[in-house]
Image (cartoon, rainbow, N blue to C red; front, side, top):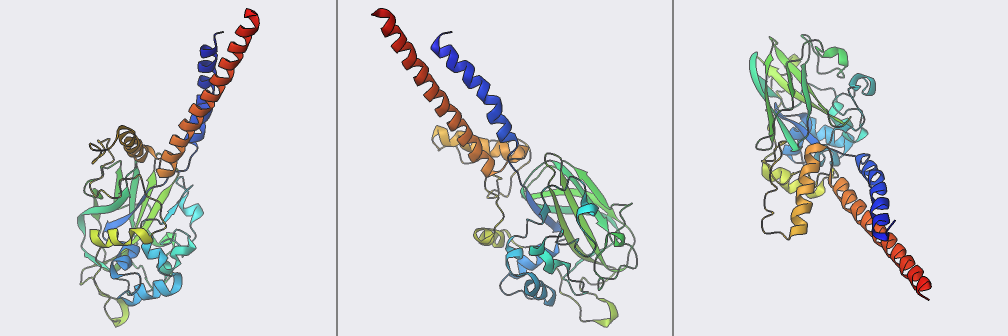
Length: 326
């Protein structure tokens, strides 16, 4: 077989192994409920270093400030729908992650969003769009926020909203649901289970029905109204976050889960445009920046290996030719 054809055959044989390694690379996504705003996003909006509400100050005292900078990272990487199996009672808001344990504090003064029964438009703040299903549950009548939140507190048989593969627009997934009749303080529990990965995200949103958002039980001091972090606050805290989200379009609030041309690549060199397109595609299909770097590294390694092999075969062919010519 000619040397060049040998090289092509070997490179083709190596390619499936390289692609298998790429497919096994970890992926991640990010987000939290934006409306009604989640506990972690609310506390982040108050400022991790000096929260204003008693509940958020208590959360920082229990778990530190980093949890708030990582507001979009309450997740289980291998959940695969096993939410109740992996998250014990009393740890729902943290998804059993010690970093976020301050969010599990059982208290009636978490800042809350005022809602009423009927149709409701949910907005999920997403910093890395991926395909999957959102399911939102509401606590049952008689829910007591001063007791640790348990799975049995949620009306799991009647989710108030479900949405599969909504399109991200303006930095949010938006989908509709219906809130049943309730009174007083309640809690909405959102689960985002990806379909392109076993990863799932979780969030708790405190709400009040039939009164001011700050109403509490037993005549306690009303909690403040909840408010979501601004885009400026999110941008300002990005460098303090330990959540990896490069390559997901996090810097573009208009990122869509649908394939789009990578913005701002028109003036880039050709190889940078290709890299930007790769990152965009990986964000749509379950990859992250580490995957894109791995992809480029794998391609480079494969090319280098092919070049070395080609050189070796070519030298051998030359030497053989020289010997036959003598």
